[in-house]
Amino acid sequence: MEECINEYSQHGSARIWEPQPNSTAKGGWLEDGTVDAVIRWSLYGDTNGGGLAPNPTRTGYIPCTTFQDLWQFLKDLRQTANMAESPLLQMALEGLTGLHGCQWKEVQSSQSIKGIELKIPALQRALMESSTIPAEAWHGMNVSGLQSHHYVRVSSKILVPRRQRNHRLVKWLKAHGWRMDLTSMDHLFATVHSENHYFTIQWSKTTGAFTVRDSLACHTKAAHKEATVLLWAILLASARADNNL
Image 1: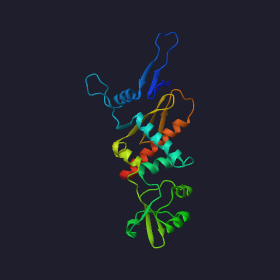
Image 2: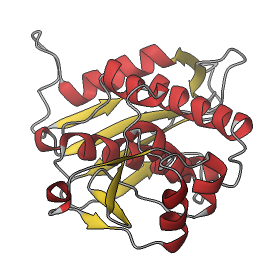
Image 3: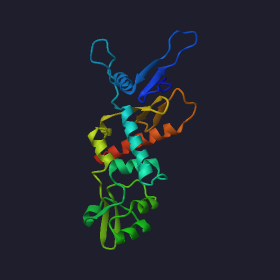
C-alpha cells in the first residue's frame, strides 16, 4: 500500500500500481473502500483458514473518509467563519472538543482547586463585561490549548469554558466512533487520500512519533503536515474527552 500512486478521474479512486517498462500490464485501480478493507485485513488478520495471522500489537485504524470529512469541514469553516489565519490544530481541537473560549460559565471556587488558572489580561477584561466573547475577539487573543480544567478569576467570580456539545465536530467524533481509547491501543494507523494519491500515516504510543509513508514524495509536503496535525487533533481530543491523556 505504500506504492499507491496517481489519482483516477473519479473522486475516491486511485491507481495502485503504474505500468512497468516492457510489460503488458496497464496498472490497476482501487477505490477508498477497497483500500480501507485491504489495510484493515493486513492490520487485523483474518479468522478464516489461510488468512493473515492477527497483528500482535493493538492497532487502531482511521479510514480515508474520516480525514476527508474533517478536512472538508475545517476548509469550509475557514471560509465561512473568517478564520483563514487560524492555526489548523487550534481550529480542529476547538471543534472536536467543543471548547473554543467564546462562552464561559461561573463555578464554585472548590471546582477550581485542581484546575489551572489563566492569567491573561485581555481575557480577564473581556469576561468582566460578559461571559460571552465574540469569536473574532477570542481568536485575536491567540489562546490555544484551552481545556475544561482551565479557569479565569474575574473579581470575585471564577469562570470556566463552557463546552459546546452541540458542535458539529463534537457530534461527528462521538457518532462515528472516532473517539480513540488510547489505553487500548499501541498504534494508530490512517490512510489519507490526497489530491493525487494515497499515503499512510502511523502514530506510536511508545515513542510518540508520527511516521508518514508516501512513495511519491521526496520531501515532506503540506498534505503530510496537515494529516499529521489532524491525526494529532483526534488523539488529543479523544484523550481530553476521556481524561486519559
